[in-house]
Image (tube, rainbow, N blue to C red; front, side, top):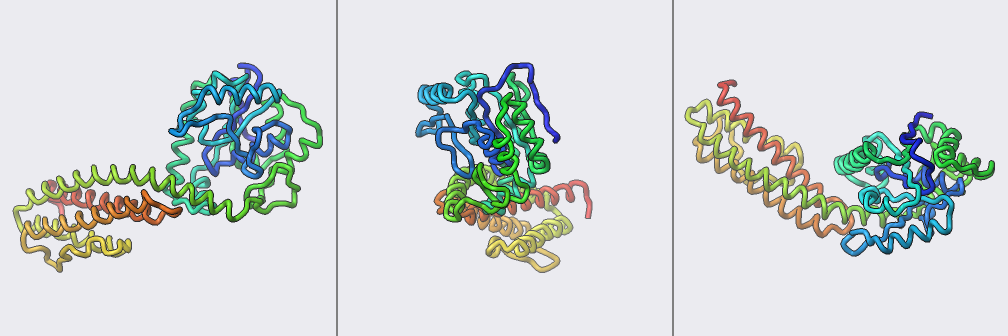
Length: 364
């Protein structure tokens, strides 16, 4: 089984944290460790196998005194213990000094597969899921460069391909020697045909998703509310900055129009943008602007007004979608409308830049 152990000579591991992007396979590793007898928390989730020793304050900052107390309690109760909670990777630097003989297991997975899993499992838009997984993966990679503790890196696909070998790799990394019953249970838990979350003591033929449909829906809605609020702020800031740049490009192109040929180039831009908006099903975006028939607009002023109307319609759509995303009740509808408005604004900006280049370089 393909894997790598880094910093093996830096000592034994008695506290292990499992990291990787959401939908990246961390549950498989955490469940396997539970089957091998490693405590993965005081009350880990029965199917996701999640738990965290990190106590968070209301502002999401780490409560270090309470976290230290939790870790001390786990140390006193278990010779080996660990946890899996993907977002904890962003806090691990703060609590590593509190851990006893720490080590890390990093699960990697193809980013497209992660994003597709998020789309199917949680209705998470592919672009957002891909970006989120990339952020987590890069953050972990940056930490791996300098973490002076033992690290096991294992591809998710390999865990499913060779579950028996995975068990041996985990035991060797943690230097534990569970009984044959525990080893066999861990092998049984890692099943490539599993269709969802499973308890760590599931039988080999229990491949269905044990997680209740209501819980899955609730998790998906909570994620949508959180991501819609956060991503809408990011998209809105990007939109406003680009809107200013696009208005400047509009003014610059209008100033370059001095001959009929140049006005025709500018007119073609607006005509092509109207076609693009219709093809994208932009819900009326741009519908208030003049859509000229060939040969184009009769004056630069009319062309400038038409582009201004396009931008105003896009801006109104973005503002309305931003408000909706900030108040999402558990779906991505408003966020997707904002995202599409941003994409269309990018196309407008690029089209104007292309028109400037055509005029500057005197191309057709």
